[in-house]
Figure (cartoon, rainbow, N blue to C red):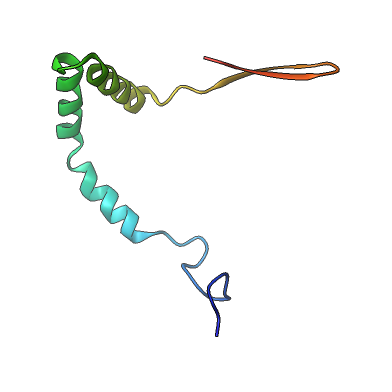
Length: 85
C-alpha cells in the first residue's frame, strides 16, 4: 500500500487550470472596490501611524506592484553581496 508521495496518474493533469482558485478569485474580485475604499480610509484616518503606513503600502503595492529588490555584487578575491533598499 502506497504511503503518499508521487504516484503515476495522481493529481491534476499538467497544464489544466485549477477551477477552484479561479472561482474564489472571481468571487473575491467583487469586493475590490470595498477593500480599496477601506484601505484608503485607514491610510487617511487610521488610529495609529503604523496602520496608516501599512494601508498606504498595501495601496501602493496594488497600484504599482511591489518594488524589486536591488542587489549589488563585487567580484574579486572575495564575494561581497549587498542588498540595497
